Image (cartoon, rainbow, N blue to C red; front, side, top):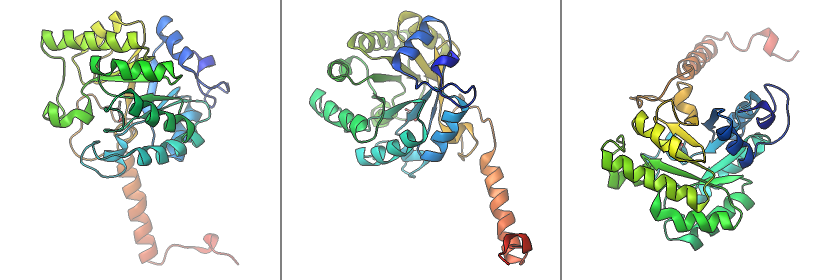
Amino acid sequence: MSTTASPAGASGHARPVTIHDVQRAKEQGEKLVMLTAYDYLSAQILDEAGIPLILVGDSLGMVVLGYDSTVPVTVDEMLHHTRAVVRGAPHSLVVGDLPFGSYQEGPQQALATATRFLKEAGANAVKLEGGARMVEVVRHLTDAGIPVMGHLGLTPQSVNTLGGYRVQGQSEAAAEQLLTDAKAIEEAGAFSVVLEAVPSEVGRRVTEALSIPTIGIGAGPATDGQVLVWHDMLGLTTGRLPRFVKQYADLRGEIANAVKTYLHEVSDGEYPAAEHTYG
Ligand code: KIV
């Protein structure tokens, strides 16, 4: 994505990113980069690094709040964290994830929830999961002036019907359905769509079929952009990670070492030393 459309920080430009920049990136073949953030500090780091898109994902429930899925996440929890991210990211485009149960009743409920994300938290856009069945919702929100990012493929809020976190779109019929869903969302007015955990060929087919950008997470290299979860890419998450996660650091190890050193130094009376003490 062109630096004129990216946050300040890395290259010193200062214009906030808009959904028009996102569309322009697709048209110009520039890759879109998105990461999740859940608080002020991480948002500041992303904004200063020049990350154009920040998602306050409902993965919040699992990586920050310790729930075993995204299903229990509430609107109030999302708003609390979205506010913090918005305060830390004056240039990135901040997308707030509508949590499970806050939009599935239909367009009116979705509008009421999404309005809170923009008015009370300062988000620039919202994300919601689902394809053709969400067309009316997406149209209602975009008609009301709320930019919507779709989310197809593995949709974690439906983990109970999907039977687990599995790769989606593997049969030809499922891939066709995904294409139909993606086009329906685009036609309803979505400005972009996340594709999660689908074969890379499906990622490519959907990306070529749409005029809005696709942002992949486990959807191969052909999507218009990529998104990863902050904790996963920084090596903060434990346990088995999905194949698509690349860990760019081992922060869990770094933090654990620092904490252990502190523990030993305090226990041994080494800290605080003279230079940490007021005369
Ligand atoms: O909640 C989230 O973090 C997401 C990303 C995985 C796309 O939806």
